[in-house]
Image 1: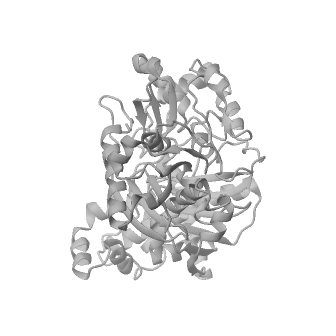
Image 2: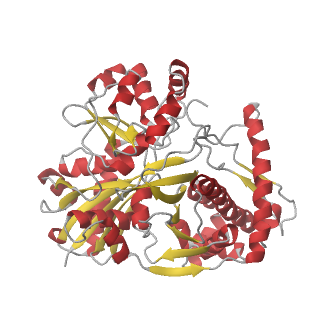
Image 3: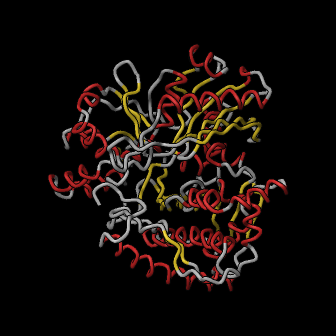
Amino acid sequence: MKYLMAIDAGTGSIRAVIFDTKGNQISVSQKEWIHLEEKNIPNSMNFDFKNNWILTKNCIKESIKKAKLDPKDIVALSATSMREGIVLYDKNKKELWGVANVDARASQQVKQLKKEYKNIEKEFYNISGQTFALGAIPRLLWLKQNNPKIYNQVKYISMIGDWILAKLSGTIAVDPSNAGTTGIFNLQKRTWQKDMALKVGLKDDIFTPVFETGTIIGRVSQKSAKETTLSTTTKVVSGGGDVQLGSAGLGIVSTNQVAILGGSFWQQIVNIPKGTKPPKNMNIRINPHVIPNLSQAEGITFFSGLILRWFRDAFCDIEKLEAKKQNIDVYTLLEQKASKIPVGSYGIIPIFSDSMKYSKWYHASPSFLNLNIDPTICNKASMFRSLQENACIVSSINLDKIKKFTNIKYDTIVFASGASKGKLWCQILADVTNCTIKVPKVTEATALGAAMSAGVGAGIYKDLKSASKKLVQWDKTYIPNKQNHKIYKSIKQKWKKIYKQQLKLVDKNLLTSMWKAPGI
């Protein structure tokens, strides 16, 4: 029997997942990790190579042990990761410096770039589909100005998923879907746009080879085999960005298909032809897909999954004990309680992530508004439901923006990742968007997409498109409630007006923004 391994480096955790060649999940090992702020560097989010490699190795070993298989039967592996996070190496391929996805230390560098080079962000956005908000150029400029010793040693750059593959194989390379999020990339040519770096005074000789997703880049090295219990016969295959490989894992491989990935962050994605030009207002992000002839228009909702985790850990100790006694997941218990709360959660308005404003991206202060001192109305169940409703409402606003730019029409949305396990959350999403929601059997679509990539490299599948059509199976379908949709439509309009006012409190320095893009 042949097997495929997917390694998924997310914002909040690292996972190793083993699949058979029919797309069935055999085993999984997951470890939560955190990204620490660097001392005296506000808004930094360092990537901890040493500890994170230990966690990665442990996940690989544990997944193999759980699967009870011969490592030689894992014919290929691939990796996917949070996008935007970068890793820099010296000439010996040793890690020098790295940051996770929403590191925002380079605020002054963004301002500097906009001041010294008129309209440069717009110029680069038209080529790459990316703004400076999460891009690599300001971060590299920050490193050059604040730690020239390290900057001068930099010989290679990759993304975090590529770092895992490099640790396993010794080969440092990137793929278009993840490297595209650096902003030093050409959407049409699907390769580095090196002159962008040169134009702003950065090195242009650190850019590693670009391999399309599914390309073999090597095999597991002897050193890594000893560290992970993997076999040296296992092929190491180019992976991709979590959202793009997640799309393949959801069957989103053709033009005009729509999906929402409900993980730590929520991404709303729409497949568009590769030749589509980015919108003039720069509010929507455009990325290379893992399918060569496609790009993706993308909205991002910040921390939707992490906010529920925060709510669980901050307020729900009693529910944790109750869930343990019932032998169910605490989120299942919270959904059961929230399902008894009427649509609109008694008017509670959560203020967390804003809708996508890629050209000027920042958030209001985290808040619950319009609370009530009646405990039968305002309680953990109603607040929990309001958070679920809010994630769906903000996603709907982002999809409205993409619809306006692309002129596409759709009546079905594929929903996956952790949030799609919640029956109530799925129904709320259907009601808010007025779309049929389809949930695949394998809800961890990102890992399945990475396994598909490994399978393409191993010759098991012809390409990602055919692998996706073969492996993706559907589990549940949710039909929108028209009456609920009318209510949510009104709440959505109210929420937009309220959020606008909350941003003004941040602008006046009366409250602290949940997150600000560099340069804001």
